[in-house]
Image (spheres, rainbow, N blue to C red):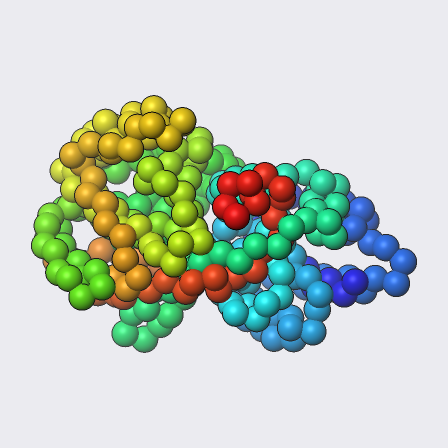
Length: 301
């Protein structure tokens, strides 16, 4: 087997489990190519010849994995997410193992499924996301949490929420598959995989293979107004509590344009950016081929 590993040295808390993975995965005759970046070398430069490999392993946080997935969209090359970031939400949604020896076994014996991705485009830039992208409140949280992620892990997100209790509220215009909506709120979240930290599900149904994206409008006036929606998500563990309360409006669509006044900053898969509204998001159906566990097949096939 010919395996390419893209390893983000700057992800998470500097986990070295990728080297245990390599030792466990290696078999006679294999070629395993490890390429590293600390953020200086762009991932796009490391993956130009990825289509000549049998498997690509994306080792890092969700942003790293999504960048690899987007670069290989519609290539048919199976990608194994290797969770070494802060939250590792994609692996959690897929119910893939996190232990390196179990992931080494999954590399060869795992199932293959195709999943949707999202593509977010501004006037001069386009980027892909695997889990979700957003603007406004969640982008502010990601930017606030970023400096503390290495030291604090997931706790950095909770601390960021505690210092952003009264976020900016804007006039929002959404155009979803040609239909326009106007409202006010503190942010927009575009959802492919629905589960976030602590396995809370933002939307009731997790359908990353349906050719659609969920569009969540955070209508709250403050962070406190989101608490009933969080409580509803906690109750929805058995799939029998679909209501998320009055603080959220939820739509779905294939192409979504977002405008906001004042403008919102944008994040994708936990990565803060300097990009801002307006932007357009479209779904890329079955764009990414992933190596997954039997549990993921039971959930999504």
